[in-house]
Amino acid sequence: MNHGLSLKIGPATFRIGSAWRQPVEALARLYADYPAPADGIADFTVRLEPAGPFRRWLRPSIFITGDHGLADAAPMSLAHGLLAAEMGMNLQMALGWRRHLLLHASSVEKGGRALVMTGESGSGKSTLAAQLGERGWRLMGDEFALLDLETGAIFPFPRLVSLKNRAIDVLAAEAPAGRMGPLLAGTAKGDIRHLLPRSDAVERMNEGALPALLLFPRFGHESDVRPVGQGEMFMRLTQASTNYVALGEPGFAALTRFVKTVPARAIDFPSGEEAIALVDRLWAEWA
Amino acid sequence: MTVHRRYCQDSPDAIASCALDDMVLLYHRSSGQTHMVISPVPEILATLDDGAAWTAGEVLGQLARLYDLGAAEEALPQVEAHLVELTALGLVRIA
Image 1 (cartoon, rainbow over the protein chains, first blue to last red):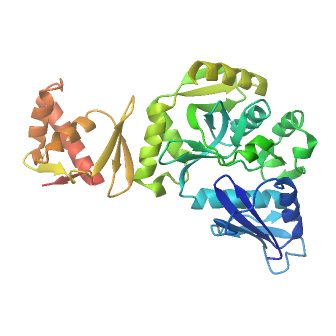
Image 2: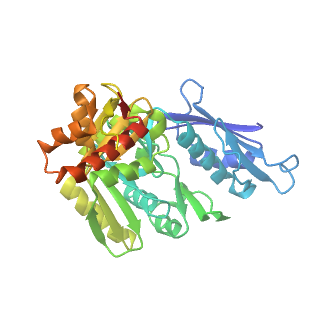
């Protein structure tokens, strides 16, 4: 690889190699305040390679690979190189991380306790976490929450927040321009712009917090709050975990402890402001 | 109906269980699979907890001391069916 960068995000370390300089330059700018791996050795390698023999120069097209990869992943345009690097790191975590139970969830922290939000893509969990992260909460992550197998604490994975479509304007109005990445127009998921978390999220990336509340957010509906039974909670969290099966009994023990000790609610909301009001109310009530 | 077939636990520590508010989770150590079950499956497995080999009729007799299961001629095929299913999953074996 001609261009490279090493990064530490929470407990995980990455070495990103690229055939082109642009994706690495974009990463280096946005991740400037993140530490490098302490021992110089990364947990995972991500490689951004040309999709074919001439595709480094001719209609440059990126194939994402690394320690873990998907053989049938569609190549991406060089203009979306930053997104490709982010997807490559996510892929390594989703397929290779074993030190925590990995939940596809966003999380924020206040007063030493964590709010965890899980839901499918488009549920609003990422945008809501990013907004809370601008309003007095510590953003722990918008994509993965790491559940510690021994202590039951949630550990951060505060990578760049991936803002999609309407969420871009919502956060651009709250966060300074210097923490926003370039607009990546017309990706497979629509327009994407990355947001660098606030400095407290980066400085405290090694600091976990015990989970106090789990929410299942759903954007685009009238405001509503519903209790979620432990059985449904367990089922949805196993679906939201990429390594539950791989971890075996320690994963079972960690997830059942989470389900039995953390209250859960499903929330519907028509706008970010109403979501934040709901979160404030539920946090005061349950956390 | 295999009324004389005897069933027993796979092994004493084959399963880690966790009761949630609306179901019981069973983690089967040898397969690594998690099963979600509701009554009467946890009660059937609890009956086999003593390590002995039981027929479906004996399991039913034990359960009937604790629960109202209705007429035996209707309950027995259901208990047998659960035991067959649990055997297929590897949670119970034929003695």
